[in-house]
Picture 1 (cartoon, rainbow, N blue to C red):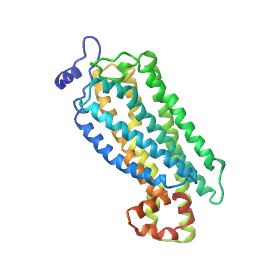
Picture 2: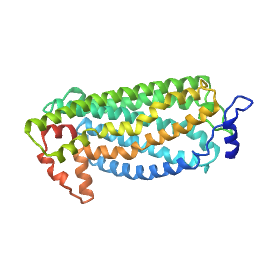
Picture 3: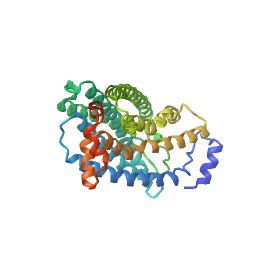
Picture 4: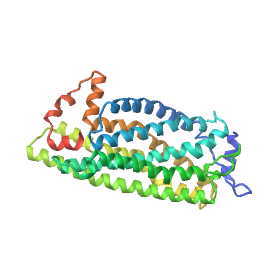
Length: 337
């Protein structure tokens, strides 16, 4: 691929009105970054899957975490395909495969992950609100049915239609995934993007509400028991806000710029320079979103006591934090175990 020609076309619009995408950066830098994510993410999530395989589905909390691991493993697998395609090591047919299937799975698992983290936050909030009882939505059967519905709905709304509607006859000159979509495919793609925006902001609001409530209860517990251990308080706060931190770091930037990028794909934005700038911004924030495959294991360690115990026992490492769990307040245990 001649990058110099791409740079020229980025400065001047083509006579046909089409805009050639500048992929000079994404062919070199991002494949290296995705390779790093793939290596770390695959290692961490395979270890997490092995540990969760040993944990029974005794609570909805564990069920949700197991589904997060599955979503992360699928997302990690798509990174390897994207890396080969973007670096130019594969044929143009691999690029078509990425557009039709791999990229669709990437986005689908991203939003399944987002929904599941919202459910985890709600589950922790209900646990601290009713420490000695269970709401019906904390029933394990309900959790299993709900997760199956989430996977099915996301597949049949965001996954399968985008795969089917990427139906134009491909050629070796394919550069943009949107060029493989017909008018209906572009409209569906745009609608799905707006739906995913709604999902993200709804879940983010839910997480903020839930963890505000949790942090308030934890603070009240320390205040009532007159515990002044500042080190323990800092650790508690870090654990409480780990989900919120993952959301802001991984998913916030991507969703701020996804709407303008979608508009550029569907033909609303005609300026070639702006389209290429949005493309680079989208790729950068998408990589940041993909880092959740490496950060989610931190959530398992901080929030799941059983996972933490098996991990430390496997590594034959017993830190003081494990020994002091028995002396923590009931509010902290309910919120973070």
